[in-house]
Image 1 (cartoon, rainbow, N blue to C red):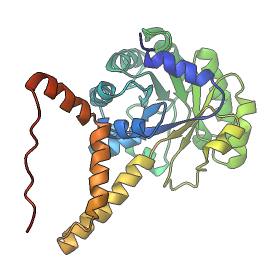
Image 2 (image 1 turned 90 degrees about the vertical axis):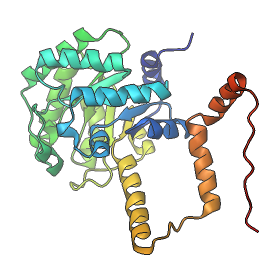
Image 3 (image 1 turned 180 degrees about the vertical axis):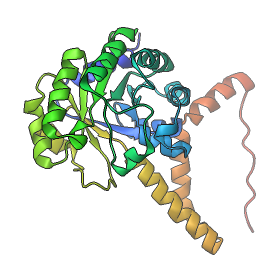
Image 4 (image 1 turned 60 degrees about the vertical axis):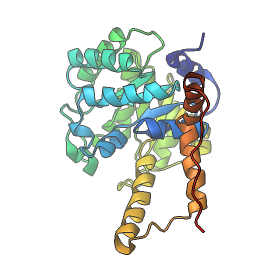
Length: 302
């Protein structure tokens, strides 16, 4: 019997070294990340919100759950899901955990921001609830999971709104309330280095936000490993890379009327995509059920 993604994730966290979890936003990006050798994935809120073009604060629980289901259908890798502020009070958090766990998440992270989440969060205007209210949400999350290996990750944004010291105080309170891991956003390299000794009793997650406007550090796995972090959560790069490529391609196509692509390279890329989505297995099944495949003869230019 194969190991459940939740159990596999627990096992990964116990192993030495820092794990990279790249953000995916749909089944294809998940399959490509898996083909590239990653052992765990995340569905980041920014990535999902940008992919749907409605932004994270406007996404409903069911919209996120649909993405989770789609990704889980194509990969068995551990999947951490951004559950934002849990879609409400502790009662709503209980339902959030149940829905996302059933949809196929291996873990989720909830944050101590207000609900409804505000779009101006993306401008750096972060607003947090009280520690006491967040502790109630954590208790509700821990009580509602069905699989004991399902991990509750708790994020604080208080290091930006208040101070590093307040963020540390909250993190340790969240650990005491039952958080399995802590996700933090230190504002300086020194604070990033100090976090392991100041929050000693739980694995730490650092979020790399490439392209952020606030000069938050973007670090390598080796750096974060040396500083004691368990997960490098690469939250936004996949969206940035896809957007950069599409802006360039669509602009060129619109301006010139030509695709400007090297066909031999595109043949290789297309073959890689088809391998990632499992077309070869589909061909084999069709051959078993429909008989020999007779490939059409391709006409060649004279």
